Image (cartoon, rainbow, N blue to C red; front, top):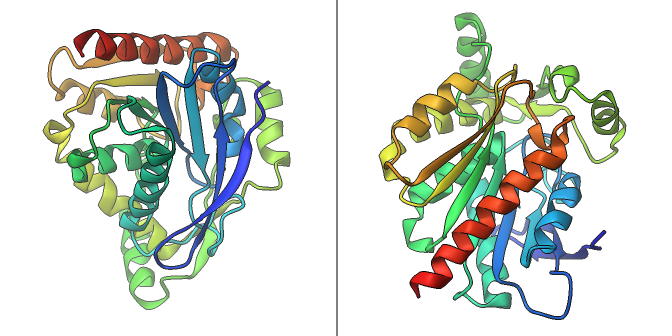
Length: 289
């Protein structure tokens, strides 16, 4: 298992972002870079098995805990707007590329909320020059729509009490078909269950914004879709992917997988699918140079 190097980055507003870097195995330098963008309530440390898989194929990996998550600073589960997340992502990505060289292919790997943020970043910052992205059950739409009364109350409270927090109502049994993976999540001291009213309305705004701009995603993407996801809607992901440029989208379907395919019974096969796609993209880029 590759051991992560831990560090901190300071965002422009003073927020401390906790960073984990996994170097490649062996003496050779990396062939590519990958930045993990984690989901709500969790942290980048939960992707160590993915980082180990990718480092073995020559990919250096970075994962940063979002503000208000994991070991980063900030009120748990609160954000003024999702642009704060993507601004932090830009800081994390740029410093990573400065360390290893901007000539290396750089990919994003986003899970759930992290998948939504990855798409928002690609849409809003095409000048970043990224080489592609992996989107694992991205939060483009909720599997169960919120009642109209809840939406109205959420928007009203976000104006009056934006930092008021509540439980995220996540059913942890919907994360994975593997009971041990679910229990590891429940027992993880760095996982939290908080969301603020402003976070909730920011999520809704981000989903609306991103879903209307599918054609602005101009890099190759791999979609990892668990068809049994009861948290984020697989149907909405399918619809979005169908709008992307032909020949630049690949879909890896897992008919029995829940919300976290990489933590389910098929986890090794899922990790292999991700690493193989990244290897193919990296090889294609090297041949075109």
